[in-house]
Amino acid sequence: MSATRLDGKKIALKIRAEVAQSVQKFVEDGNAAPKLAAVLVGDDPASQVYVRNKERACEKAGIASRLDRMPASTTPAELLARIDELNSDQSVNGILVQLPLPQIEGDGPALDEREVLDAIDPLKDVDAFSPINVGLLMQGRPRFLPCTPHGIVQMLHRCDIETAGKHVVVVGRSEIVGKPMAMMLAQKDSTCGPQTANATVTIAHSRTSNLKEVCLSADILIAAVGRPEMIRGDMIRPGAVVVDVGINRVGDRLVGDVAFDEAAETASAITPVPGGVGPLTIAMLLHNTLLAAKLQSGQ
Ligand SMILES: Nc1nc(=O)c2c([nH]1)NC[C@@H]1CN(c3ccc(C(=O)N[C@@H](CCC(=O)O)C(=O)O)cc3)C=[N+]21
Image 1 (cartoon, rainbow, N blue to C red):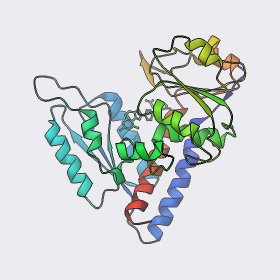
Image 2 (cartoon, rainbow, N blue to C red):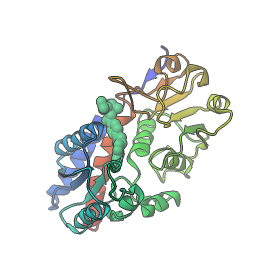
Image 3 (cartoon, helix red, strand yellow):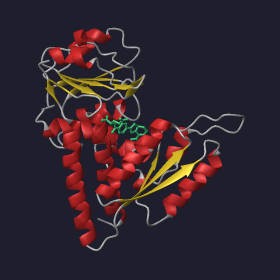
């Protein structure tokens, strides 16, 4: 392996320490500690782990949290009522509805993710999934930045990886990662984070016919497709930076969207899974929760 391993865990701990310091200052200035409300519907084991990790990270940063567990049989009306309650609860600064929502067993009405996310007060939308926050980002005047793409931007910046003038290929076009990631890297100057804009961006996806050629033209390749190890070594341009957003459970192993060992032969730098992008997502969630508290206190 010749590539540098980009240690997301270490960078995330640094960011979390910075957030903790800012939280402390915010509280010393006479404000209540920021508070995050997480809503977990159903009992998906992976979601349980994520939500617990988020709670623990909040606690370490001095951020209060509450977890609302709701059964998989929750109806849309019940979930929307809970979100309303959190929207009007002045002590709650950030609201996160853990995705994916469970698919209904039996014949009750299905939970529509879009409808649920649309119901979250945009000022408390720490995931930045609401149409208002997506629109603001699109227009280059973001309020909240979505956690995973923001974490990637922070990592590139903190590892001195320049994006200006570079060709970035984003593989995947999800609302959560691919689309906002592409938009952020194409922005002018630093509207979406320091020194991490002005890239030439290509969005590739499952219907891209010449995926290998497109990937081979990337200076920075961001894989966010959700298919285990689909990006192979022969798709990496020598010296490219590879960012692996994939979190795939294969048996009892956690693997990314990139075949790490192959890609590391050719790349100049690469993020591992685990220990890459995942921890950064949580760090930026804490950042957004503090930002939400500041916005709501008029700062
Ligand atoms: N409303 C909402 N917001 C989210 O941000 C959200 C979500 N729903 N649903 C699920 C996905 C996934 N996600 C991860 C966050 C951290 C790790 C993470 O820290 N992973 C560790 C390993 C964790 C493990 O071992 O399972 C790592 O990569 O090193 C992974 C995945 C946030 N998501």
